[in-house]
Length: 114
Image (cartoon, rainbow, N blue to C red; front, side, top):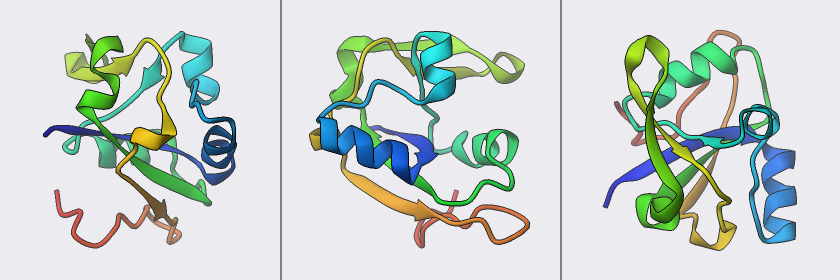
């Protein structure tokens, strides 16, 4: 089973869980799709787009939860990234972990050794 990752603020995720649907965060809503990263892309995503930002969570999204709305599209340097043209049901999320900022970088959960 392939999984993807979404980095976002704890508050935005809490609202999605409360509402029963994640429609995206600011950049997602502006671009018209939900940006996800693969395991090999997510650390660079954190460094590039979330440097210095605290109170984040790392949401693990199983491929089957978004398969019908998933498109692979070129982004950074032509690399293909998973984009969701739809919503994500929080019930289908397998993990939500803290992604703390230590002053230099985000600290990924134990066992996340990519």
